Amino acid sequence: MIERTPQQAAANGNYSGLVSARGVDLDQLEPLRTQVQTWTTKAGTGVKFVEARGLPIVDVVLRFKAGTTQDSLQPGLAALTLYMLDEGSRRYTGAQQAERMERLGAIMEKQIRLEHATLSLRSLSTKTILEPALEVFTDLVAQPAFPAPALEKIKRQLVQHNVSRERRPSLRARSEAFRHLFKGHPYDNPLGSTIQGVDAVSREHLRAFHQRAYSASNLEMVLVGDLALSEAQAIAQQISQALPQGWSAVDLPAVPAATPATINVEQPGASSAVLVALPMNVPANDPEFQALVLASEVLGSGLESRLMVELRQRRGLTYGIYSHASPLSSGGLFTIEWEVAPRYVQATQELVTAVLRDFIEHGPTQAELKLARKQLAGQLLRGIAQNNSLAALLTEITRQNQPEDHLNGYIERIERLSPADIRAIMQRRLDLNYKVLVSVGPRVVQQQLPATDQ
Image (cartoon, rainbow, N blue to C red; front, side, top):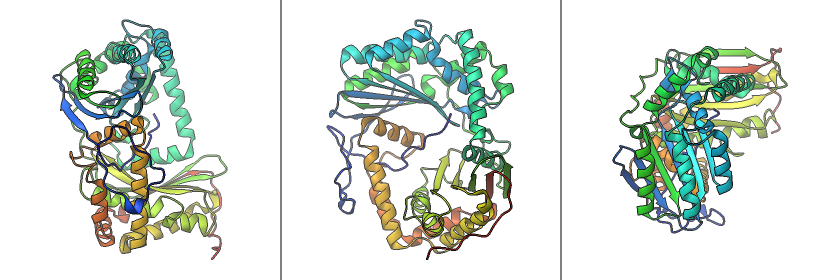
C-alpha cells in the first residue's frame, strides 16, 4: 500500500517506437509528438491508447476508483478486495492463475492508494501469448471467487504490513500529517485500514464491494504497445464487457479547514524523520499547479536545490531532503521531508521553515528556474522511454483530469512561467500560518546547528 510517486510531467508525440533520453540536449529539446487515441467503451470505460511498435510488448493498466477512501465505514475492505483478486476466480485457483502467468512470461501487478486501485499486465504481443494472458487477467479482475482460506491469510498479511509501515519513521510522519490535516475526512486514514475494520470484512462484503467498485463505468484504462488501434479497441471492449456494470464512485467531500500543529512522535532509532506539510488545495489540472511543481523542483529536488545546499552541502546534516507537490482530488499537500540526527530536529525545522519563507517571499532565480525546467524535461523523457512507464504516466494524467493537449503542450507551458509568476502563485497558494511540523524519532536534548563549511 506504499504509494509510488508517478511522473508529474509528460509530453506527447507520434511514435512508431519510444525514444531514449540518452544524448538529448535539453537546451535544444523540441516538442514531442505522441498520438494518443482516446475513446469510451459501450460499458462506459474511458480508454487511452498509444501504438508503440519498437518492442513486441503490450502494457495494460486498469485504474478503478476503488481506493481506500471508498470504504471509510469499513476500513480495510478496499485493500482486501484488491489483494484477493489473484487468490482465485470462479474458473481458476490462485495457484493456476500464477502458473499460467509464469508460463506465459506475463507480469501482473496491483496497488492500492487513497483514491484508486490499480492493476497492470505486461505481456509479449504475440497472439499465442497475449490472448491467454489477457484471458487470465480479465478473469481474475472480473470473476474473483474470494476463497475463505485465502481471506484469512490476506487479513493477517495486511495487518502485519500496516504495523510494519507504522514502524518506519518517514511513513509514520506522513501518516500523522494526513491524520491532522484531514481529520474527519476519508483521507485521514492513510494506511487505508484498521485492525477492527479488517477483522469485520466477510466474503459477502468483498463481493458487494467488487460488484460496485470494479464496475466498467468506474474504470479508466490505458494500453501502450505493439498493437493496432483495432486490436486495442477489441481488448478494451473484452475487459469492460466482462466487468460488473453500472456504478461509478461519487466525488469526495471537501477537505476540512486547515489548522497548524507541531507533532512529535517518540520512537527508538538512530535518526529522526522530519516533515513539514502545507495544505495545497490546487487540483493537478489547475493552470497554477505546474508552477508549484516547478517551485518544488527548485526547492528540494537534486543536489543543487536550495534545501539540499543548506542542509547537506553546507552543513552535512542529512543525506537528502526532498519537497513534493502532491495533488489529491479534494485538496493536496506541499511537503518537505528529511532525516536528521535526533539532536538537530528542532534546529532543522527552523532552518527549513526560514528557507521556505524566503523562497515564497522572493521566488526562484532565473538560473534556478532554467535548471528546474531541464529536470522536468529529463523526467519526461525517462517517462516515455519505455512502454510501461508511459502507460503509468498516461494513467496518472487521466487520474488528474488533465486536458487533451496536456502532453503536447507541457514543455511550452513550463517555458512560459517566469520567476515572478511562480512567486505570485506560491504567495497565493502556500500559507506558512497553516504549516504542520512532524517528527518521529527518539527524544533527546536539542542542539543548535553546527557551523557551515563556508
